[in-house]
Length: 366
Image 1: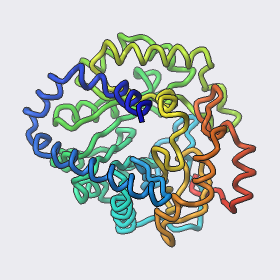
Image 2 (image 1 turned 90 degrees about the vertical axis):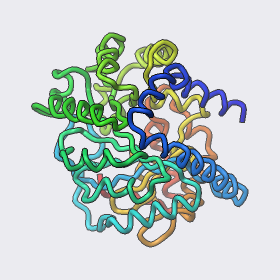
Image 3 (image 1 turned 180 degrees about the vertical axis):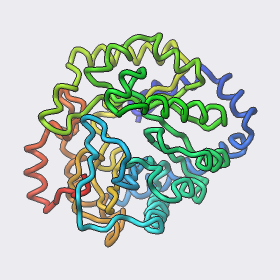
Image 4 (image 1 turned 30 degrees about the vertical axis):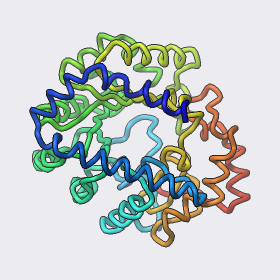
């Protein structure tokens, strides 16, 4: 318990440092003043529900990652989420609502809206509006966010948006496509102007590592009004893509750099997998989060797509109690990254053996 407390304290220390900035934002956008007590109260309720489930032998995550669609308008180099043809029908809007309600009953507080590109999913912004007591975090490439979408998000008070940026114009367009950087920056600017909590999502690769390790580049985004950042170390989707992965030495330097940023800059940075070390290793399989694929398969995370349960014909509680999830959580070897950016991706042989033993199958969406 003490270890978890210290880890959380280290992560939230930047919020304490720029409390004046947060306070100013709250008073400038009053909808967040009224929403905060409601969210905090529900957070406490969810905590109690998770504790009750744990006493019953069910490990319920704080967050659930929802890959709402496998469709995307971009083809980013090295992306794991390239859609595959599948005969399995995708989850409908009503089914996603059912999953969120079910997760709420178990104590899940936050939902990450991912894809594909989430803005290709119809009625996307209705989900946070239908569940105002939950926190929703949306990851987007920033190219499809319309004025109508911005207006709808302006009337929510439980949604944070992360726009994917690779670095400067050269870095982003080189990996994501022509003019993508311009569209993403425009979306980021519109979000800031409307007071919608937003930040940047960065995949750290060999190509943009030197850019992000320079504090002046991050400072430029902070000057815009960005106070949230998600730094994800690149995870190869195939042997061919390993050249984009940073080295162990670069990873160690990045970790020290992010710790320095947290101590000296007014930005809340999440670092994956660096922050997972604070919680004893990989947080997948329900330890901190779990993932629902576009066709309803419950998988440990978006990268490791093994499944034994599909939420179209089973429930979330059953999936979290499954031998697949339970054995991943209990096997400390599987939770160790061993110098890689992803614990489960480095233990492919062990996972293949486990999958055979528990009857798991590979999700077919990606």
